[in-house]
Image (cartoon, rainbow, N blue to C red; front, side):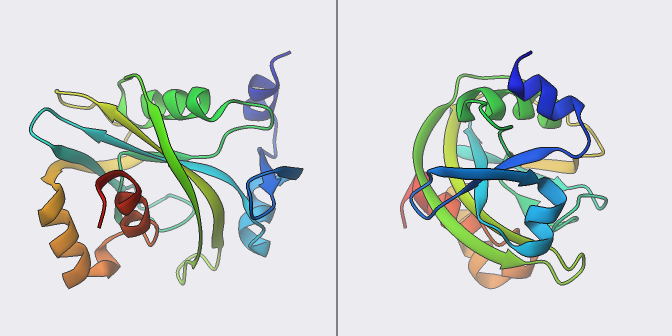
Length: 179
């Protein structure tokens, strides 16, 4: 059986633990990885339209971490052995209801603690980019709102009120749109 199917269908869901350079050093269930703050593989997808705007989602309030905050188009974790591009394409369809070809830019590592859930994001985050002109059809358990926003306007609002956004958004945005 494809390991990504086995991991998604099992409980608990496993993530790949990594070292600082992104090399896989083991697996752990996703909840434990977030409870203990263990570095693990993740991805952040940014989708842009032909006007140069990026598609943001507001994470549904029931999300495990940082619910109710605005974030990039979609995020997730590849299952053990699953290619990042495959996992990101799958999650884009699951979360936002559409698919597009994606390209990886560069990874970065971040750490952020969610005061509401008490969980910690410590992720080796692969940043991916795609293009789409249209309206998404998000799963309301994943994203309860969405908007297209010009990158400079997003940067300005991030600087003005960072608490509205997920803590990784600014760093990930720099990976795709510079400073």
